[in-house]
Length: 275
Image 1 (cartoon, rainbow, N blue to C red):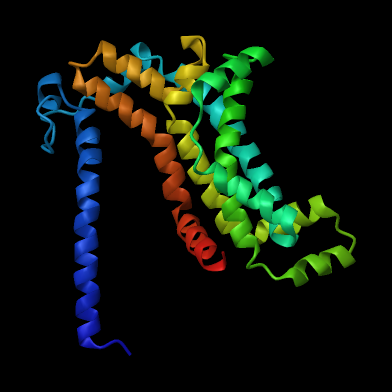
Image 2 (image 1 turned 90 degrees about the vertical axis):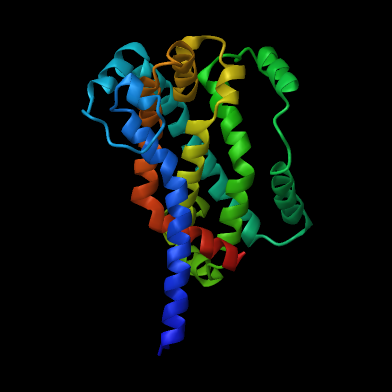
């Protein structure tokens, strides 16, 4: 039974954490309010309510900011990059966690080492030129998959170690091959870490600025962050439009995170315990 002292301590912790959460929410609220204000009101950078809500600011951003083209390019990159990084990472994590030996251990640490390596712009640029895929969706998607794999493999491998081997053995006796075992048996069991990786990978790819900037040769392929950057350069004095553009940028990933947040917490906790 929880004592009065423990209840008081829990409430104090809750209040402190809520205060920290509010600090992080201040810029978000300022952005949302600023997106429906006039130019003068938005330039004040405060949390005051607008004298009149100007939702037509969003219409202006859509018409002048080429946001829809940015959305299209971001979706064409984010969806396949997230999908392939999850599929390859899950399969690699299952194999590496189930097989014992120096080779498996060496490959695992090879992926872990990838977490510490930064992207080498010059050599990657030269390689894409040699392969004749520079400036294509294939090149950018491939780079994102390669960059996301180390984290994905590590988390899946850690989670699978906590799944009883008896599940594999029972499925094998019933005639399941490796792919069927992975996709129909193990992945449903690994739903928390699966969803966690989907959200983390999608947010990382969607918000990435540098890779599309360096490896897309044309502005017609620019993603949402690059589109917003270009829009800000043209309308840096019109903060109501800048706030509107930023709101449209974070909205898809915010909705994704809010819908799947319970799985994210469960997946991160489970992976840390079972690893």
